[in-house]
Amino acid sequence: MIDKLYHNRDLSDQEFSDLLAGDAYDRQLFARAAQVRHKVYGKAVYIRGLVELSNYCRNNCYYCGIRHDNRKLSRYRLDREQILACCSDGYALGFRTFVLQGGEDPYYNDDLVCEIASAIKEAHPDCALTLSLGEKSKESYRRFFNAGADRYLLRHETAAEEHYRRLHPPAMSLARRKQCLMDLKEIGYQVGSGFMVGSPHQTGRHLLADLRFLQELQPAMIGIGPYLTHQDTPFKLFGNGSLRLTLRLIGILRLMFPMALIPATTALGTVDPKGRELGLMAGANVLMPNLSPLKVRKLYELYDNKICTGEEAAECRMCLNDRVAGCGYEIVVHRGDAKTAPAADTLPGLVLEAEAATLTA
Ligand code: 5AD
Ligand code: FES
Image (tube, rainbow, N blue to C red; front, side):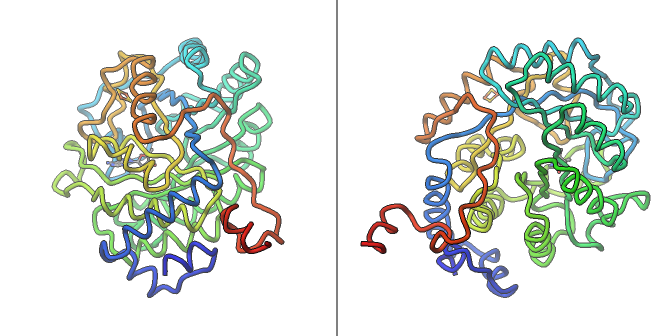
């Protein structure tokens, strides 16, 4: 089964389910995923500087700590100058991609987002700009793109209709989410999507739907992390998602999408102290540390016990260097765009060079 995936062949629903169901294939899976990752990206780990610009949100996702109805949270917004300052600090630390992420906060209207995007691109023309600001109209997405945004992250969260409805209030819909992703792709963004692992009520069937949806979408980036409890949400009684299953899914995604940018997420680092390292070894190739000002870090708590809320950007940068080196990889100063597909006539997509040499010899 693993070899089938490795040779770019699709698996049946049953095969995927067997793969997800237990640890029987894990050793083989992680070995093959590391091999593919190495073949496509070598030792490189790309970093993105995350600026969490606002914890105001008009939505009420049942799992999320910054949901509108969480009255216990004090809310903040960063202004244009603060955001630009975060990016400049990040630039000095070697970041060449900035990700502006926030709750769905109408304060950042289209004009303001465009103004901030073009100011960042003007100050750092050699950098990529990623937005992660939720659902917007196609027209708004187009304006942001024209103002200089290169990439957009919008996780689909779950690709199963009935599961989506259990995670979100009736005002939100999976159809709308999918439409946004299609709009973003059409406009020309490098699109990132993804889902939570072990979210309340999730079953293997739902995860299968996630994999199938990603096959349709073919995103440049796929972010997954374990669901983590937040005490001030309606889901406070549900336990955390599993580290092991998240790693298994990272391995599967690496084999399914050899070129994809797959972050070892902060949620993964929160569920286990070595989570991000394990993520890299399972096939991930991106890290997204925080560049937000220290004084607001604690307030962007999507889930309890989020790591790095007490560290300055520079501290995380050094810490990550050591962690990445510790698993034999290397952080690079680079925009870190996704590699594009090899020519269609390349033999089984990802035959290793050595193997290819013997094949053609
Ligand atoms: N646990 C884990 N991930 C979460 N996210 C939001 N709330 C939680 C939680 N409680 C994820 C969502 C969102 C991303 C920014 O963070 O997948 O898209
Ligand atoms: Fe933030 Fe280690 S990455 S302290």
